[in-house]
Length: 586
Image (cartoon, rainbow, N blue to C red):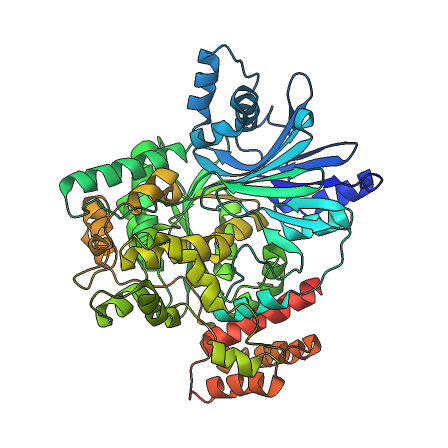
């Protein structure tokens, strides 16, 4: 729900109303139903609204009675009903049913101490005139995006980078350090962005802007203690299902039509199965299919829909899907080598004909070891009592696109003096060394892959179609429970998601539980060799303008791929995505 943009400006630098409106225009897809803004002295807050809770009375910004506190948010507080009842029990009355008013009233009562009470996905901005401060708050896992930049006119922020750039009129320059990390990981890892001077507000943090100064602290983080929950027990399975069931129930709250994305995989089937328990009518579900049977999951999706009595709508996509890659990059702000963004946008557009909200299965793979890369690595690698450095060095190749050596031949200005992506990621996981190695691998993807790529996909592609995606697996109770569970219970005996499969087997059945993991992507590698060869050749040539890449090496990758000597699908996808980003923003 919604998009936000704002800033704290130096005296005399406050933007005009025309520029504020222009910044809001870049977020219309996130909130086509309503918009509002506040500005005075040196502060601007703006919002575009996708009306989902309290459609009639949810206009933002929300103001305290004395006008000293102003609140805008992007997202949903799923337990807002219970929080409103708590406020009422202490004599505090809300005049609407909107969750943003609940945020305002809780802040007035408790200051920022109220954050632990929130169960939701959100990016919140609170202006407190008494403290001459703006507080930016991002949800625990980073489901909802939020970016910030300190520029010549002050400090600006927004749900999307294009909005804060429009508000500040700042110039755009490519960040070469971020580019290096992008080529390593296939996405730009937070807090970096490919826009020089623009950063992610990190998940689970509060950022304070006061008198032009920026400070930040964590209000939530993953458990750091050694996991001790035994995932093989009936008690564990009962608690897991109870948490996930309640997380799904809360995310069915909506005053607007709601449905679900359904691939027929374990995670999306589980969420649809749990939704069927709580929802009092047929839930529409949406799926994408492919002509290539290696990538097509439509029969599994239909099997799941039939099992739970859901009405499924589906669409088959073809190579012309790539024609939308540039538009998808515009909505994403940054390049992503993960081409599954495109079918996600297609299924979101399909869903937008009927609903404003969808449930998704995102997060299950990262919490419970669903990717085959985990199984392939931990089956083969065994070192008695390894150090943290030993295991990370061995695991590192499973995370990378281009190795540091490959980057040195690809990037013209690459230097060993730069912060190496290896060190960047290693420093992230070091505080979690009390965890077993399986959980450390999952923590890397939860802290980087989810907010850097996998959650960008449902948010940006859903919002591009004005559809809100909700992720029950990433309820903070589920996340904390998962990382208190032993890794051996998630990944062992040649099984991914071992304990989760045992938990949901009765719900979704043996066929959906035991089906082989299939990545949600498109056969773009084959298209590059055949019907879309000219397309990929053009976009590789387009990169020459950057002056940053060794072009003979770039075309060598294409020749290796076309000749079938080396499968370079992932590398070529990343470079094509970079070309689209250049065209959109440079």
